[in-house]
Length: 241
Length: 210
Image 1: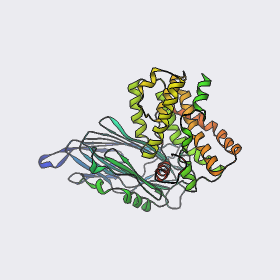
Image 2: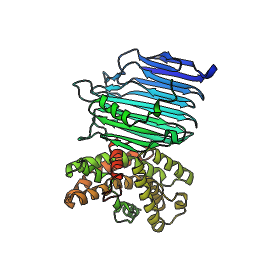
Image 3: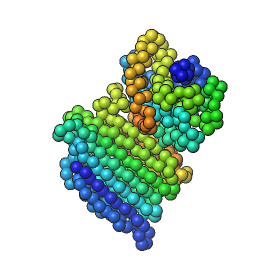
Image 4: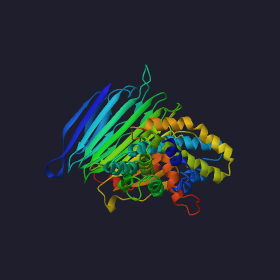
């Protein structure tokens, strides 16, 4: 099934943000849950293998948008031939976007492909998180491939593809984690958002121009998320509702 | 044309690669690499991520114009967020430019900055040496494991024949990576390698530069 979500955030009167476009079709609905925040609500099980979701987010200059979801997404295998499920998020940001969806759980035999492509204007602020768990409780791990590409003013800032699960290149014992989390923050270049390298146990923070990317992996998702949060400067909470 | 490729991938080419372990030194310190089997796993992991990325960039840089080379250097930065890995790549790029200019004189070298990423310099060297993008990808893929394998041999005092066999058995994987890299700019990353690179760079007692 094909899912399409489109949201446009625009500066309104009195410095507030209005959402002139909120459209959703397929397996996701969008609920406005604040002046500048929306929650994505799954309207069906899945995604299933073969399902394809395209989420388009536009945040105009002077506007801010927070995107959340109400529950973890559970990626399940297709019934027939093995096909991956896909979720592509395309963000065009001149204002501030804060994207924090609930975890993706990838069931055994499922392969989920997540993609975030963000085109940032010079003054844009982006914070995006990813939380992944391979396999439900007592289940063998599924497979997850996540690609993040962030461009600022047309220049690439970050472009990485992480593959987790059986058959993925960076997933070989003894380092084959079931849980993975990452947060990326990118703001206009300036000392306020700079961060030095920091390392933890199975966790690392790397600097970006005007931001940082923090990644952690391990066995249990709540610990991994805690490790990412411990290395993420508080700056990521600014600029959003 | 084959001999230029052999020269480019030869560990005796004085480009400074021998001072880098590609994360192996820290992987040994962390207990991840300790014998031929765990070395093979580590090399496969490195080949499929940073090796694939390097092969894609090298292929794209082979025969590219100056503007494209600058854009590819940005793409290399975006795929190498670890400052320690970036430094290692640019040090090796610089070393390769120095020897490459002498070995394969060409106006192509003038399009590069002083410290390009290693795969970009490798692509330019391949182009200057009359090689094709696929050859540049092969050299990049092979070099992504040959240096680290030698480093492991030295650090663990492993049997050179065993290490040579480990590397040789990865040949089909090297060919596969080079084949997939041409015409693409893969972005495969391994957060473990980033962590190892940063922990290693902070150490005072290291033998290798990376």
